[in-house]
Image (tube, rainbow, N blue to C red; front, side):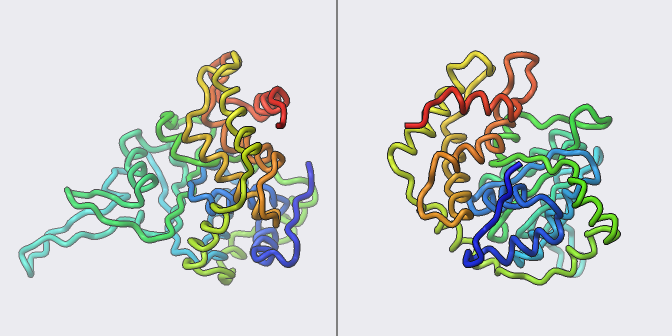
Length: 311
């Protein structure tokens, strides 16, 4: 596994260094999460309980200065428990809307696949439009708005698989995995990192995020690079290894995350290496293997990359 590092003069170097002190041995995953945020998308983390998914969300919220809410998804959670409800005020004779936990800047939708599909869908409008409609009235959400959803592996008891339409709302999907030996020894010595995440001080402010999003969105992508992205997307549609190919929206998302990744690398232009680095995280949850129907694996994406020549 390559070692990822950000140059000391990069504006996010202190933030990434601070996150690395909490989420031990997972710099690549931290950078993918930040690339997803700066690309304007939402993040899905699929992994076993106890590997640091919640701690990652808390760490990013603290370092970015974002107002944070955690929503624990369960089988009896209702859409109104997320968006909010109107309560009758006897003193005034009218109804007052009480905003739900969705009205924050960074939402941790914890174990999203333990809730029913109806409740899962309550996130769709929020993630896509930055607003919620409750009881006939549309209300904007705080900006920036970033959802980190976690889900347990589908084979675990009590899970409702996310439909394809909702999976597509997540720009990036990643797995944290088990820590390496050195990171786990440090974790055992510290007694856990959750308390440390809660004590972090912000290194950015919410107003900085739109500026950084604009910086990444305008990073130069040369015509040959655009042709390479299109060739990768087209290859998923004509290769027999996948049940269906990537959509045009997925192609736009791939380019946006590659731009953010290149910016985190300290470059002012996107290279094919940037596209290849983020392709598994953008594509695996959107593609299904023709053999067995399960989601594509990083090995599948590796074979795809090798099949498409770099222009």
